[in-house]
Amino acid sequence: MDSMERLEILKEVGEEIVTEQELKELLETKSKIMAYDGFEPSGLAHVPFGLLRALNVQKMLKAKIDFTLFLADYHAFANNKLSGDLESIKKCSDYFIEVWKAAGLDTKKIKIVYASDIIKAPEYFDMLLKISKQLTLQRVLRAVTIMGRSEKDSLTSAQLLYPAMQVTDIFQLNVDICQLGMDQRRANMLAREIAEKINRKKPVAVHHHMLLGLQGITGKEITQNKMSKSNPKSAILVHDSEDEIKKKINSAFCEAKNIENNPLLDYSKHLIFEKFSSFEINRPAKFGGNESFSSYADLEKSFAEGKLHPMDLKNSVSNYMEQLIAPVRKHFEKDSKAKRLFEEIKALQVTR
Image 1: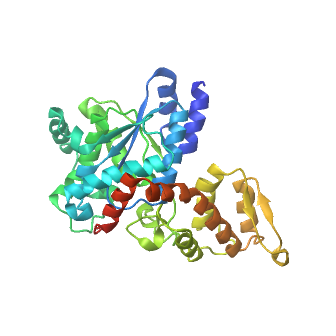
Image 2: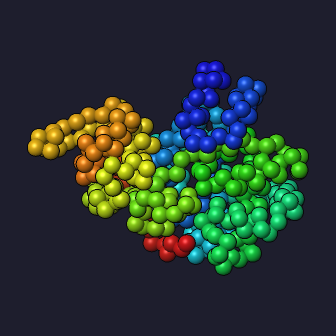
Image 3: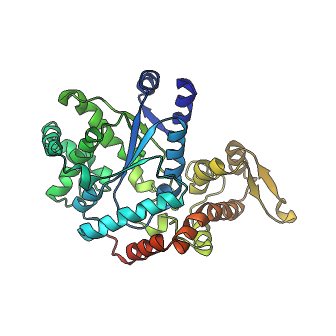
């Protein structure tokens, strides 16, 4: 596989690449390339974490990119997730690994790193201070959206450290590619701006798409629109039963002919067509009969023209989402370790 073929695969992952030319040069000149994505252990896994993340990592591996999944346990601690209880956060980290396994990721092919391990390195605090000196308080406040906060929130001084910590992680892990979601863009841009000032390599950013919440678009910020487990009305969990999936999707926003603000079309494009070669609509003959779509473009066109009713789309998306989620759910029902971790995390009080 040559560099251009690898680039095309990475472009499937990146809704935005900063910059494509830098990524192209990286692929052409470096034999071993490391990418990473990081997560706060903060509760039960939803579809973006459990399904989309697995798809994207598999594509990165296909493109011959080494990948690190970073468990940001100390970041979750600073951000008061799971009531700021570090022991619970560490249990949630172990639960996350089980989710990745259940979603089909071969954990032998990736590297899993805990924040609580890398911060022990003597140079971590030194780098954190060097980075912090490059950031004004105003710039830090603009970046707190990366941890699901806003400038208007009452923030602790620990939370103000968070953006600098995330940038420090990037350099401490020595990654070439930051392969995080669009909601993490501000941290990656900070890393790119600061890199030369502290004599570090500038990472390429490959930002993946953020799946819409079930309520559709409710604001301009990505964090307001994405599927978030902190908002139960917006999220499908990887543990949801078939009935729960159907109920959630039936109540999802799905305005007839609206292709710009439709979470179900979003899931069809970024999840269903990634795993299935066709999209089947099963309905009585009096409502048009069965129909099959071989591409997302055809599905979207039919819906935009009003040929496909919202209820028909909801029914089919429910069926496909059940097929995608069932293997993950079953892993946590049958594997004793996974089941124990799931029950422990489920019992915890999830805090924003």
